[in-house]
Image (cartoon, rainbow, N blue to C red; front, side, top):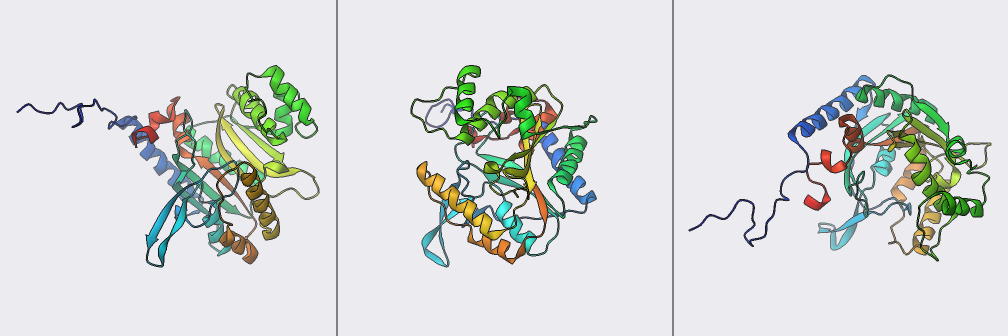
Length: 338
């Protein structure tokens, strides 16, 4: 009897996609990175926590698409829909409201519809929260963290959202009209927008940011963009006395969006209003309905301490550390080999 060739399945189809897409050296570097992360937070006396990835609630932000599964078991004979979390934020805020101090978590997160050079639907996320920090203090700590893990010495650049737009496009994002943004996209970019497609003001800003501003940051030193428009402050505080400015930042390294942080909104009523607006946007866009985050709202009602939080993509950080161009190079099994 002839042996079955090792590169073929029983069906006779050539199949080599059981192999990982990364190398042992990259796996070793991932292990070192995780050790370095924990060493940093241990030195800063921040508690590592673990929260569920399967939850009854999920983020209704229309820019995020959650994955879900159906659980049938004790207590739920008819079954219950559970969501794979897009981030551990809601559960971590419940821990903060319960009096657990500054905390961090390394976990898997899941987002539907995201795959490409910098995206995999399942990815590794680092998220941490600092009590009594404002977002500038947290930017300082994020800079310290990233510099230590990447071996960087130069100070990071900091630009307001307005300054970044003016520097790289000549547009004032707070004062420009809808028509001015549309004309800019038509004239200065290769972005193709389908005729009749509904593109709102924020969508034009996002297109210009991703296709014009962010690529130019690739030649700059690591850069924080901060003070975003309030419309982009889903879970962030809007600064008192300054209309339309959210206390939010993003960090770009080598042109890659690496981290997103803000001073956390603690007002239950305001958060509830934002969730309602998000659900309305999802309905208009024919996106799946998601339930209200009642447990998070209850935690906010109980009292979220003053804090700032940030989410940082560890897969992207590892890409930068290893100087590789595609996320597949540092994942054992990306979605097409999972």
